[in-house]
Image 1 (cartoon, rainbow, N blue to C red):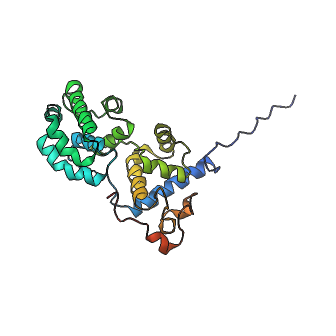
Image 2: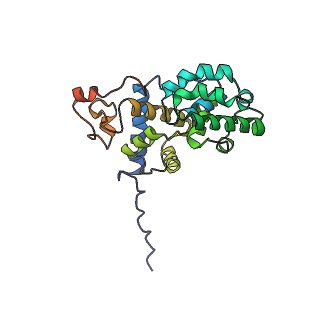
Image 3: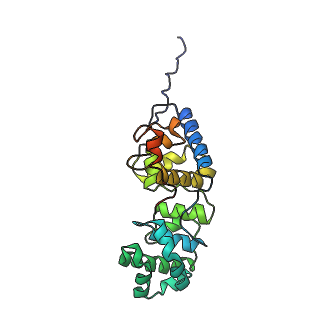
Length: 247
């Protein structure tokens, strides 16, 4: 009998229909160009230590980084660590974070979070994902922000900007943040994850907007499958570019 011929293996499916190798190469090229475009990319929340970063990241929900940075000095002058914040006067804490909106709910979150840090971790922020996500009000997004920026432990931060751009770039079709995190993470070396997050978030805040992205002023337009969703005329597109992130 003639030897059996193995059935051809179908190429791994990718969101854009390109080969897996081509997708990886294009994704990494985009990240390299964005790194050149935003050499100062970083976390836009101000912080001096892991506790501060954890708190300001929790506070940044449904408000802007600029507003959070505005209340930060007063907040940490009054409550410099988890022990102090766990014993905070509720009304005083509400007054300090009042400009951020939803101040009652956020005060409750900070009190519970600080108390949990004191009770479970001696007042210190744990440098482990599994411990962070067990804290009140802390999800994977917040945990990865803290790990990547306070501890230097690589993590992907899938916020609204990151998710939108990753789908536009054809890196994933997932709308679930955890699934998107895993799919995008598989395209890049782990060491690049934290800065990759900054690059996409900065680009999403400044150029690749949810509505009317500035396609004609985009440095990675030639590698973007979604090119043309916004104005492609350079002059029109340039008017849409923001020089800073969220005001």
